[in-house]
Image (cartoon, rainbow, N blue to C red; front, top):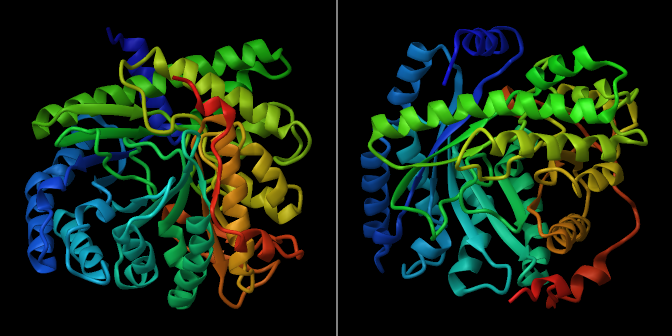
Length: 452
């Protein structure tokens, strides 16, 4: 039951602490759009998306006005296109990507996710078509996001796909060089991808999901940072309890918005993803939360332990506030989208190896990181393999969203604007991983995969 004190506290969080609903994302099944003829398939896709999501933006805007709660993004996720287009007699799926883009523009959403393939155990012909369509699709579209799942705890790591994705990321950067390789910001490589993630660029509508569903992604690093200022110097037990209580309040707001939006749209409510998703705005940073725990600069010794506490406390607080918590749910550490992470990277304290260690205990992985434009495809593939291994062994989602910025080197900056922010170009190791990536095949699943 809501009371006046809770309402006023939430309003204060919105007005002064950057609290918002980061996204309401409608998941739409496109399984009934399959057709051997590419044009017919595209026509079916466009018709279904625009029919199902025609009121999504209006409902979001109405709720914003009536409840006074900012909803930053309205988005769509669809069934992985490698599945939907599998029967099409086509060599490329770029036209499907253009169709998704057109549907997203008609509906007025910020992004549409699901130009995706799930290849953790091997690739079908359709999977290869989709993967090799990604660079051109990212160049030719504005709102389409792509993802490829290359590994899982159950299946191991598909190293052939990992090797290919290094090439794909490089080519995407080259084809969008005029925008500092911005196309790579819309491409993410996963291990243990989840089917109900509302956040981009990795959102897709899993085959185990309903026909149509409404998922919500909340945020609120600024709220947590402010709460921790009231417990300076106190033991970590108090810190964890403070984060839990704050995460409960944030998630309650997401539950309220999600249920109301699903009621008005006439579709089921799916999940609340209670991830702390930062923005480039001052006061809305995960890095600053970690520093508030006592670290001089994010990335110094102790950062991984602080992030582990934060991630765990967010989950514990969130699950008490909603019956349906899902997605990724924890804390994101995208470098370009977090003012504190940017500052830490520019100071030289936060480096790629430390970020990799932090991904062992956070929600996702190496996110929105810019590296020199001459970084080899093999090095990018090796970075992807390392992250996939962390996800595989720890039974968690990990991902890589990396931007080899064309023509730029360490010390330069990549400007992307909006929520994507800007990123300092970070150094990578100069020793080769070519022979390692060239082996191909599959890294076997770990022993803990045998749970039956």
